[in-house]
Length: 104
Image (cartoon, rainbow, N blue to C red; front, side, top):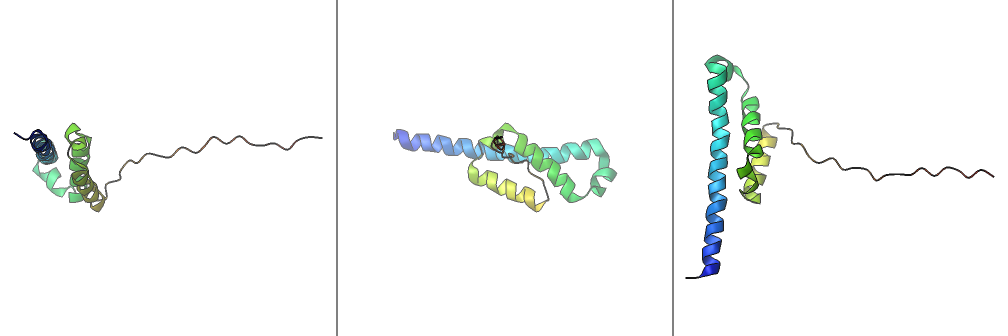
């Protein structure tokens, strides 16, 4: 038994399991929306809106964090292609202390 090889296999299996579960979370959101909205509303809602809702759901699921960077990048790219606005961290400006002129 090669412990290093077995551990890599377990890590590989966990990563792909998270990807599969995460894909189901995406599809389940479509199903839930269809069920809750009904055929008429679902079918007349623009595809991009439906995809944005499903992508947001899958990105907020805990399995997304453990699905691997390459998978996450593909989902983000798919989100951008569907006009999903991603919340990015806003850099905080350095605290600036104004220097006042010295009075004589």
